[in-house]
Length: 110
Image (cartoon, rainbow, N blue to C red):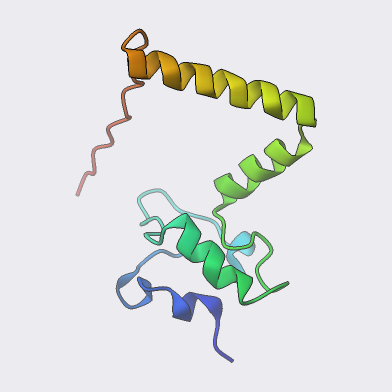
């Protein structure tokens, strides 16, 4: 049986131990310093759709899955409010009033 992670374009060169396309990913723990999944979220989700019921997190990482659950638990009113706040922040950044949030820089030690 072909497993979902075999369809990933990064499969041959990937060294991620906790692959979102692995049906047993939720049983595995990520260790510090391990590589993260390189596949883009839409690619993983497209592959996961071919395997309904096999992937408990539908091709999402653990963090993405929990964020999705939190979002879905919000009321429609709260979702609309948060989307409006996000849109307002985008407008402020575009106008130059609000500085963009600096990205976190991670150093890799060999």
